Image (cartoon, rainbow, N blue to C red; front, side):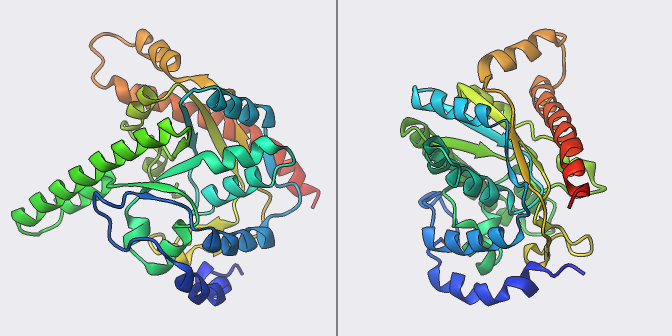
Length: 305
């Protein structure tokens, strides 16, 4: 029987709380947060306990080519599948520990786009998230939930104003990151995939805007995970279940963002009602194919354990 994150690693929570520096409330002044290396060390220890032999980066040459493109001055974007709150830590860890120097270089460049929920909902989730450099946004899904609440209209208007201020500041922070040669990482689904709920794996149309902001991108698929949603309690991140597993994170070849987008748009009828969504749908289709291909390999390796 798998233990929850709270059950297995509760012993680390007080330590992480003592190390936390992240803002508990997000506004336009604090959307960019540098990684807290001390909390990251704690998370690395959790990863090492649960990653089985065979865990690795796949298609390593694509990660390397992407890093070289960014070093040459290209503005780089990573789009990654999203299954758990271990996705980003595992990628940073595997890159940082890679045997060649470019791996550490790329890991140090990554800045993840994160929803403000990670900072505001729970002190322990905040300590978890702050192990990695982030630009914090007010997600469209969060604003939709506010609009559906039975609260006074002035409160809804105030929250919309807050969302606009945060996201405008986030766009400025992303622009600054690009100028510094940092890489932006986005989860195109905007949320963790929940089995049986295909809408949680649907790409957000806002991702099309990121393609227009960057020169090159890679798509990183994830097969296997040490942290899985508790089907009975999917909203409590600390109720996630801990497993030992083989984790394979694979990269697509480097993709030119502008050409990728134009190739798709050129195939659509001029009266297509939502071309942005069609672009994002193609990204998610590539993820599905890449994921399925790697899973066949991973399943054979699991059989040998």
